[in-house]
Figure (cartoon, rainbow, N blue to C red):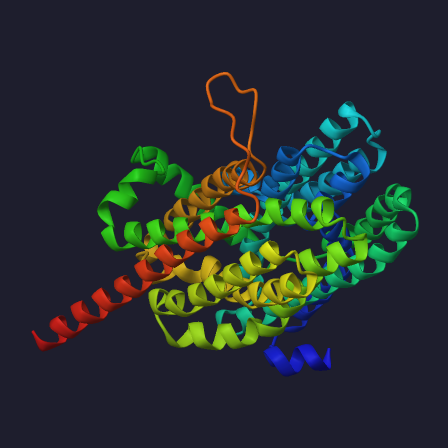
Length: 440
């Protein structure tokens, strides 16, 4: 824990909070093994090399987390006024059960359907775990140490996922069919984490459940409902921010499935090389740079932050385009490393950015808009990216299209640049507005 303590400091917690944190650390050290086996870059390569699935199936597997994003509002309502830990434990257990579908799926069309079903269901359930666990964090860990405390947990999760992939890759290269046993082992290890999380105590949960029941009654009495478009119409700045964020997300998300297809199928990279480029390098550099971006985001508005982080995304997209054109593993590895640096800042901005726009009494509504738009662009990007990359034929209402191949990454680069320019202009406009208001 010395390294983590050096990065995030030593959170000062009460004895009961420390016990809960220890249980959560055990969970992240074990349950994250299952998450690694569900990661799009891992399951996408397995689906390609072992099941020989069509390109669009890889796109579905990569976009599975975004189907989950569309369900976050449902999970929040489900857990409302209920004990949080039992609900999370049930969802975690169901996620582990979904791995059994993957482990036992036969190598045929039915097996491919089972594979996709298992992954999509697991990622949707995982969205529920993430949504409800955030409430546990807000109750258990004081505001002044919450980021460092949860940051420790997130770093542990990332490192376990990287280590799991490093161990899995050479085993799969030696015998691809051992993947079934690997998923079984991942299930057993993950169950230890589920058991550990069941011991987490939530501070002040009874009071929280009372508040949640009252809030539901008030909402019903006032006939208030979540209004997606109303927020975007009323808050022009937030709507403008979401437009540029939508473009930025499309440009990045559209790359993932085609990149897996390029590295795993077209370039015939081994499991080790595929996992290294697609997952290990970006996860490693993402984990390494989280503290740097966190300190910077603490000092600036999210639009200022986006002018910097989007520039890094654009650099990564440029390098991916070069790597794809020259079919060069080294270039692709460098590109994914840069993408990992961008991903760490992007993740922080994604989690916290809406707070710079939302009134305090509407934080959850703004976050719901943000998460919903993430899910929508994730689903669109999956179809957009792989469709333009491989092309299509024999579709009655569309002319045949051979696909853009490596030039798809150039299209994503152009969209990323448009997004970057948008954030820069928005930041400049806000600076001018602030200067005028100070003069007045």
